[in-house]
Length: 236
Image (cartoon, rainbow, N blue to C red; front, side, top):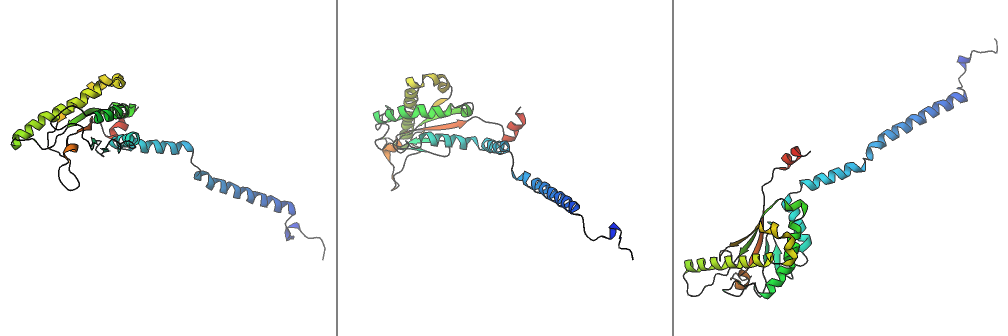
C-alpha cells in the first residue's frame, strides 16, 4: 500500500484555517454584544423632552400654588397668614387688622401688606401666569357682633363695613410706590368685595375669634383656558 494519502482524508485542520474561524466567531460575538447594548443608552435630549412635557401637563393652579408657597411660605407664620390650595391667602393677625367697627387698616396690617403685596404680585405677573389671572378679589370680613341691632340690620351694617375694609386694603396696595409699574395691570383686575359676617373665624373652642374675623383675604380667579389637548393641537 502506498504511503501517499489524499488530503481530504487528513483529520487535522490546518492551523491557519482554525485561526480564521476563531476570528470570525469573535467578530460576530462583538457585533451581537454591541447591538444589544446600544438601546440601553437613550440620548439625553429624549429625557429632557419627557421632563418638559410633564411640567406642561401640571395643572396651572398647582404651578401657581407652588410658586406662591415657595415665595411666601417662610413668612406666612410671622404674618399670621395661611395659603390654601384654592389660592386664597388669609391674614389672621392676633391683634386684628382693623379696630372693631372701623375700616382703617391697623399699623400692623399696613406693615404686613407692604411686605406681602410686592412679592405676591411679583408671582402673579410672571410670564407663565400673568395672562391667565382674570381677577384678584380682596374680600372684606367682619365679626358677627354689632351692638343693639337685630340680626338683619347687623348683617347689612357689617356688609357695608366689610366693603369699606376691602376697599381700604385695595387703596393701600394701589398707592404703594413700589407697585407703580404694575398699577395699570392691578387696576384691571383688583376688586373689593364685602362678605359681611358670613364667614367668621372660630377659636379652637368653637367660639368666634372676633379680632381674626375682622380681616381681608386675597383670592384669585383664573381666566377660562382651553384644555391641554386643545393647546397642543393649536401649538405651532
